[in-house]
Length: 81
Image (cartoon, rainbow, N blue to C red; front, side, top):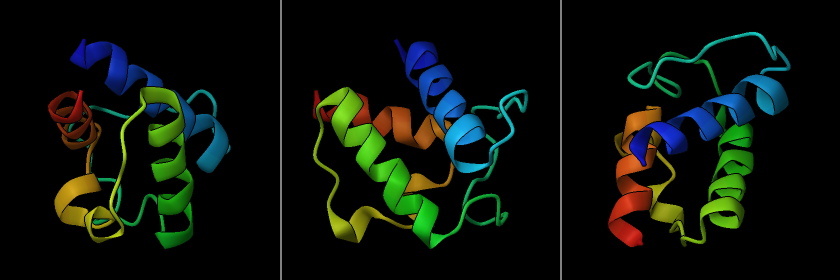
């Protein structure tokens, strides 16, 4: 299940946020702390996660401690289901 989640989120980030559909984002690649995505993109990513996985993301969780990799996001989603 984790792989399906990270693949789905990775595709969204590559296609919709980075506008680089062929870019592969590794599950442990830093998203925020590396500067790959910014705070505006973080909101888009949070909405995608909420809409597609049926989980609620708190505003206080929109940071590098919670959202810095696809693996972290998958863990958060799984813990909420």
